[in-house]
Amino acid sequence: MVVPTVSGFSGKVRFAIPKGSLMKDTISLLEQASYEVRGEERSYKPQISDADIFLKILRPQEIPILVCDGAYDIGITGLDWVLETGVDVEVLAKLGYGRVYLVLACPKWFNVSTADELLRWKLSEEGVFRVSTEYLNLASEYLRSLDSYRELVGKEPPTIITPWWRRKGAGEVEIFLSFGATEAKPPEDADAVFDNMSTGITLYQNNLKVVGRALTSEAVLIANKESLRSWKREKILDVKTLLKGVVDARTRLHIFVNVSEENLPKLLEVLPALKSPTIAPLSRKGWYSVNTVVDRREFFRIMATIRKLAQGLVVHEPRQVLLLDEGGE
Image: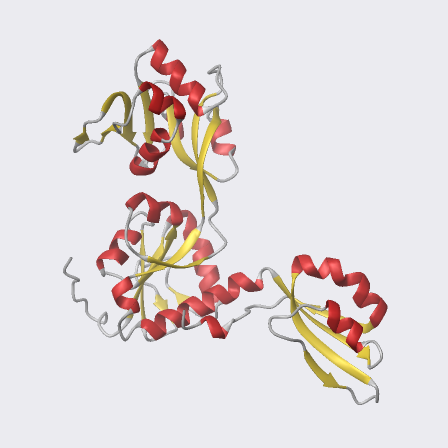
């Protein structure tokens, strides 16, 4: 692909961020990572406080392909779209939001409870099984992984149908491209849907039930592999470090305690840290201040010990936890 030259575009790291359901959390993540983003409500090219970054808002479905082809150096999108497009990009970090499950769902009144039962029943009753989805490739892979598909259909992939082209495959199973409102397709236009689900409320409200789960997706930071080998590498790793620092901080607590010299060794035995706790003597002889970052789940485990050995516990929620020794990875 020939990357177009855009005014104000060259000499910068080109960063694509997603519109739609991922956009609000993406802007929030950038701001927590110390970036200032302005104008995202009015423009697809918002301003960002880092002068070395060009920011653009695009559909998450487009971002993996555009990053792979070099139109953008880095991007945030759903892992589902990275897998659906099958692109060769570097996944730099999982970002901890936008979690969805890709599922196969059918009308509630169908007397089946699994994907295999659904496929067997539809093929025996009607000789054809129709699925509506935005995920043509992932739906095909999922159906072909079913025991019932291999037994009744064989190795041939399903037929895939879009308004522009048809990829002929096994005639018994047809996958139709959906342009949204996928959950409204059954039973008239499809026997089932292959769609993403967060809470399941939308499926429930449309009288659908889940009969199979394919994979879990979340927002990810991706990079073009050529860009990672260019002069842009350091800036890309800066972005990764700052964003990952926010994600890591959500699972950590920063604690400060005062402890006597007598109890200090016992406390250090149970106190986890990123590397090792910071220890400083207090003005009162024989007492020390200890501060460290701990996993939230570990905090509850060690709380009883801290209470017995230390005094003056202060707990902060860190904004970022930057593991700088990972920056070169």
